[in-house]
Image 1 (tube, rainbow, N blue to C red):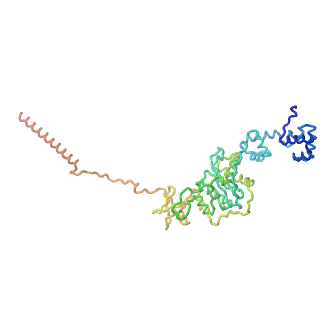
Image 2 (image 1 turned 120 degrees about the vertical axis):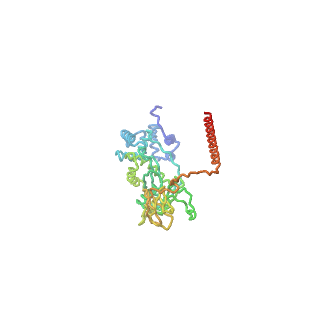
Image 3 (image 1 turned 60 degrees about the vertical axis):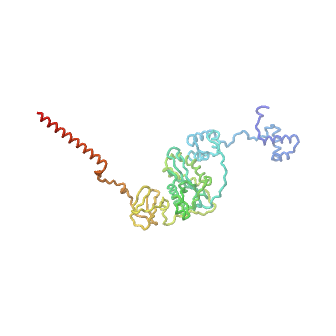
Length: 438
């Protein structure tokens, strides 16, 4: 057999060849051969004729080995791969095909690009993920918002690392996000306030047990007496707004927002790279347009048409709720201490407990039973009596004459004076003797 006669055949084709030979040897009928191969007797007769003329290779399809008339040109493949290396390196096939169409006017399918990238070693197949139990979505928009933060190198070294706080509606997949310097109470409340102004007050929030959202402290005696748990500032603000807080025990429990961050870390990072964004201010200006396109593509209708977002009640001041609140006890001089600063209250009060409110911008206000108080900051504190240096005149201590030290000194002085007088008397005697000799 020559090399031209060597053909690659599938197992199905090998079975068909064997059955056709059985028919040609009169061991099977054409109808029986059709039942065994899943072909009609008409196809069996056509294959028999081709096998008689061409041999076993007649079983193969006529288009085998031929190029598809729809095959893309080699020049287009080279152009796309060059653009991928220059502008879209690291992009996934789906996102890369979108950008090729939007920015370069080249329209190809993502599967075609994936095949090209796999052949060039520029992309790898992703491992299949572990399947977890599916949780039924909420039925109405605003019934539950999944909320979380993701710290990541969003600017790929062009700027500082930061945190993206994101919301995703459980019923519709509608998203809202914003960048912050860190994940904490103030950024969390600021993002919640912006979400509420845009969509309304949601029924519940589903989030993790981060220290900013779940208090780690023990309940006070007052909390225990009132059967309350210790609450974080974020939990307290949500409770005042009538939002139910649900804490997840694992990241997988709130998988929608977690998967959303994985999408952001792929698509959003690369979109900002193309736009040259390198700081939080520019990123927050870019986000609304990105989210509008993202929501248009991935959002879907809820099972029920209702919207459970509540409008902001008339007269409700969000800034008085979305802030840091801490209770303080007045001193006897009507001063209160907060964050190492001293404030003097100018109004007269009947009670002793007041609430110090720190706004998200850092402004301080003192509140007593819902009424804001007049106060001033004491910049220079008066010194305490202990801190004041009192210079007293030095008191000289003189021992009494009966003191042993005095007695010893006195006796030494007497002895010294006695010796002195004796020496004078001797001198006088010597002088008188010398005069008498003369």
